[in-house]
Image: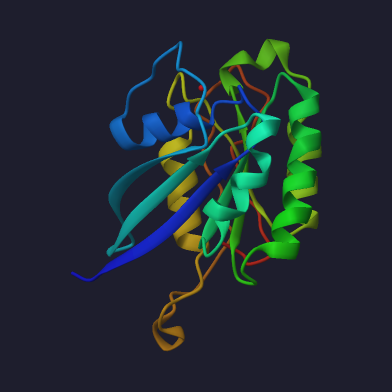
Length: 203
């Protein structure tokens, strides 16, 4: 089976859980006290989606402002970018919009942009409404999903949605698309765990 290599870059403020999402996806584990990323870290994982094998090459960038200028080194040439915010910190959602503007200016034209509201297990402390984030993602043609790296909710589905949203390598053999709707996995959360995007694909 041929393997499609997919470069993915994670962006977002410090402390939103970018590294935790990657660790959960790659190793299916969670560490409550991860050290802050310096510059960027790199991990890979191969998964099969709809009988296609994808090798995700994941660049997890540092969230501190002093490393912001280094981000283009990592998202340049990426097939997808995941912008992560913390649903309990509204300020981190505002930063998402800054990243979107930057990617629209400097990213590749067909880059898949996914917005992930992390820490959905802390729904009682929520500051960012699911509906607001979903509507924003839809307005800019991005995928949207809420995740919890702690409880593993929707983390694999995030990467599956990205794979599904990639432009086909062979347009002739493209699989008919359709909006992905994920089943709720956290009954205490406000989230509906759905994905949206103009391409009609999604601690």
